[in-house]
Length: 248
Image 1 (cartoon, rainbow, N blue to C red):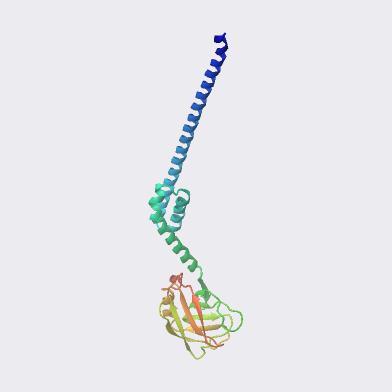
Image 2: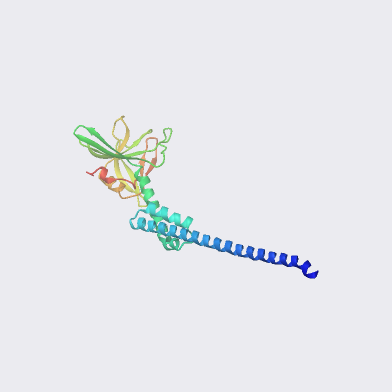
C-alpha cells in the first residue's frame, strides 16, 4: 500500500526537478546568448568607430577641416566611450576651430561683388562691398553704404563711397577717418565730385585704401555728411580677393 501510494509522488518530484533543471539550463543559455550578442554588438560598434577614426585622420592630415569636424563630431556623439574618440579629442577641437574659420572666411568672401564690363579701350573691373549695417545720413530711410574699387582703362584706378540718399559734405575736399580692426584711425583725403549722376565721394589714395582693405578683417570709414556731423560705415573686408584687380 505504501509503496504503491508513494510512487506517483516520487514521479512528480522527479518530473519537477527535471523541469527545474531544464529551466535553469535554458536561462543560462539565454544569458550566455545575450552576452555574446552584446559583445558582438560592442565589437561591431568599435569597428565602426575605428573606421570613422581613420576617416578623421585622413581629413585632418589634408586640412579638410569641415570634413574632419564632421567625422570628429560623429565619434563624440555616437561613440563617446571609444578609445578612438579619446585619441582624437584634442585634434577634433582644433578641427572645429579651423572649420569655423573656414566658414567665416567663406561668408566674408561672399560679401564682395566683382564685375568686369566691356568699355571703350578694354574692360572696367570693379570690386564692391556694402557696409554691414545701414547708415542714417539724415535724409530719410537708412541704407547701407557701398565701397567700390574700380579700374577703368581710360579713367584709371579709383576708390569711392556711394550713398543711396543724403549727401557727403566734401565738395571742396575733406578728410575721412579710416580704421582697420583695432588699430588707430588714419586720416585720408577725399573729395565729392560736382555731379548728380551718383552720390559718390572719392578717397584719393586708392592704392593705399586697397592695400588696407586687403590686410584687415574689418574696415570702418568715418565721413562728413551734408546734414551735419559725421557718419561711420563698417565693412567686413576680410574676404577680399585681391587677384580680381590684378593691376592694383
